[in-house]
Amino acid sequence: MDKKIEPSQRVQNIKEYYFSTKLKEIAAMKAAGADIVSLGIGGPDLPPPAEVIETMSEALRVPSNHGYQTHVGIPELREAFARWYRRWYGVELDPAREIQPLIGSKEGVTHISLAFLNPGDKVLVPNPGYPTYSSISRMAGAEVIYYDLKEETGWQPDFEALESMPLEGVKLMWLNYPHMPTGAPARRATFEKAVEFGRRHGIVIVHDNPYSFILNPEPQSIMSVPDAKEIAIELNSLSKSHNMPGWRVGVAVSNPEFLSWILRIKSNIDSGQFKPLMLAAAKALEAGPEWHEALNAAYRERRLVAGKVMEALGCTFDPSQTGLFLWGRIKDEKVSSVDLADRVLRDAHVFITPGFIFGSNGDRYIRISLCAPVDKLTEALNRINKLNQNA
Image (cartoon, rainbow, N blue to C red):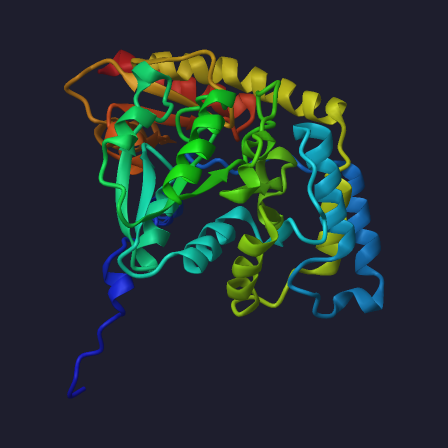
């Protein structure tokens, strides 16, 4: 070729997602005969409620259900989300105007960023936090401004410190409680301060809320704060709460104007969701406390073994954590999270997540997923104990 083809600037500004690259490495190890115990990714391994699968199966047999659907989602799903928010969060939402179904909340991160950010705008992103907040902001041409979350303050934002930061040009602030990766629970005071902070500075507060039903007795929503709809958007998802990660069902809730901007982006990117899937999702949202309690009982049992794994790795952890992971601090100051994770994968064939991928404040930590049955967690524990004995 006479002229070299170059990728777009946005491709050059981001790296391939950590788990995408790591899973290729693990696949190569498996192809070579290694038996890998994966405690890295938060992908629920248990099924959704049985009636959800039955609803999907029945809906698949209806010929008219296989066509294109509207981008705003079917009324049954929007109304189900409204009932769900009322039941669990005490939040009243207009199903026709304040609810936007999504193909997963990760899609929502993209749509919100494209709907609100111009090149050169600034975005407040937690450190540590979900890497996608940063990568999608950069794709949109925005500047990422990290704000610190620290163990000594319960991994909550320090709003006094935020006030001292240069906020000119800041358009969005990402918030996520129960927090991933640290498991810090949601606090009403944090939501109230965030809404007040956003209203005063004209910063849209985006709260990502997929973990509120996992090992968390009191699900909370930022939308329960008075006037939150004026300045906040909340993302939610059925991936973790209802064991439906591959189904790709999420939602954004906010005021009608914000959602109309998001819909402009969404309607130009996808062609709507599959109707049988939406009907099944609506059924999932009817699950009662007994179903969630049974799921959490399984996670509590796993959590006990995960705690032993964490101790075997020489890490300490806060037992009050909520959510789908266990976050632990590495006691040996000479060992980095990536060194520990790579050693355990190489020598024990156990995949854990190094905290550095979530930001610099995560480098002294590792994360263990609870999305593995007790026997697999026990196998990981035995392998790590054997590795320690041979060290």
